Image 1 (tube, rainbow, N blue to C red):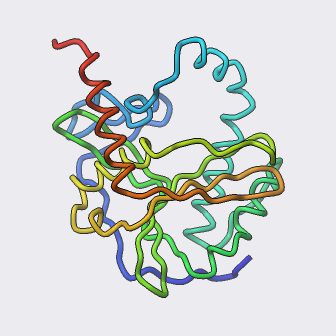
Image 2 (cartoon, helix red, strand yellow; image 1 turned 120 degrees about the vertical axis):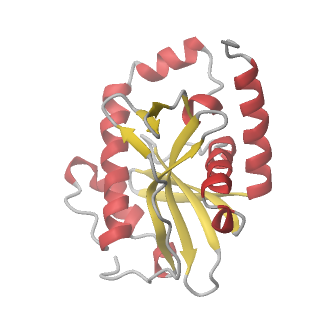
Length: 215
């Protein structure tokens, strides 16, 4: 694990007027509650599938929150902090060789689509400190080293869409999107093309909004 991380050459300012309330997992923009989140817009699971997922929430939610916090600390301070009960996930994640050349421009960055009342926060925007390449990253935790990655292109595309509206001069320069899959004893990376991610998200957004009440 590096004791220091390379420094990015750019930064993102917070979106003025945008607040997040973790207790209810909702956003407020310029004093008004935002109606939807990226996670809600791209969710295509059936009620039955959601019920099965929520039945194990007590297992995956604490793990996900802890590992996400560890990655944010690591990318911000080069120190993930106490791994607690999740060292099997955290140690391989922060020891991944990608951190030899990638640093964080921003972590847990909140953005909003005011027109459609959608908000969300990406896990990390990374910069290759050798080439300047920008990479949008989303972290997922999984319970087994044998778990398979899934297609998260719609979610990544949602963050690209928000970035295009809140930080257009930066968002248009993202050349790669990745999923960081933290598993016990192993971390793997999957890659997605930004154009495909954005196209998939816009299709999902159209479907989602068409199903919402008009008033």
